[in-house]
Length: 345
Image (tube, rainbow, N blue to C red; front, top):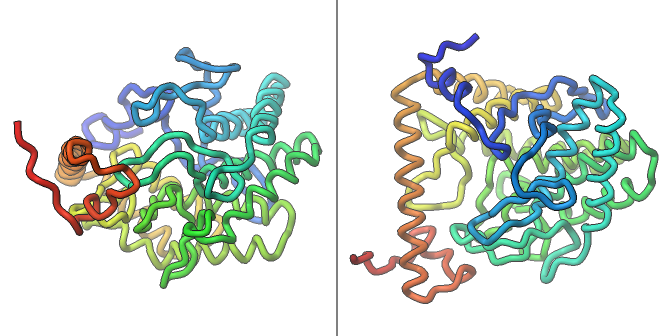
């Protein structure tokens, strides 16, 4: 049991909202077949008392009003799935069916993108205008649908999963979710230009491709998942800032270090990923970042860096709005290639 006197112990003991629950390595991972989910989402299966629609939690994403996000549906389903593996509760089974049905019904056209589960909020810091599709959203949706097909045998689920896989074979600039880089193929949670390479989203997306491939034994899909894992193995050192992990690799003037929540998630994801694709670098960085989490100087430096980064984001958004620069025209300002007038009071 971790001491509350350590940074990680204190972090684990902190109260949490529905959106930032503990997400350790999954308990029922199977390397060569479709088992439980790779990250333990069972906390997402607990009752939710906030605003909801049809029993699904709503979130005010980027202060654009309450929305039902695809990732909310997928993580809720994945949490209930791992609980169902343990208790065989028929109510959980029906919740999984409701989530899978929603995913089938909502997968469809997205303007200027391939078919997918659309996100309806702007992401100003990455210069992305709504609507867009996400590799993470597509991947987690696939992970739900293949498990739902395994339980229910409903071919709609597998058919939709197959369609949801298609954007992984197309680059971001053609409406897909894949970045073709010098290191190989990377799956983009946010289809930004320049690429953002969000670490947790890359891994969640990769698991969706893997899950479809391992469940259907489709060789093309298995090769794509393997290629994604090899790319990440090459890129992983770039996510290390010497004392902590980065959230992503968008070329901001200063690194966007991970919050303690995401740093912990990165560790769990790498440990789970190592089970499927045993590249030693995954284990090495999981161990390294675990050690960093135990250091008060590293913890304080990371939290301070995150607070400073968020203040810079808030200030930049304010100055962009004052200058009349639209979200999708602001990438050069967020990357430091162009400068804005200094904010005055």
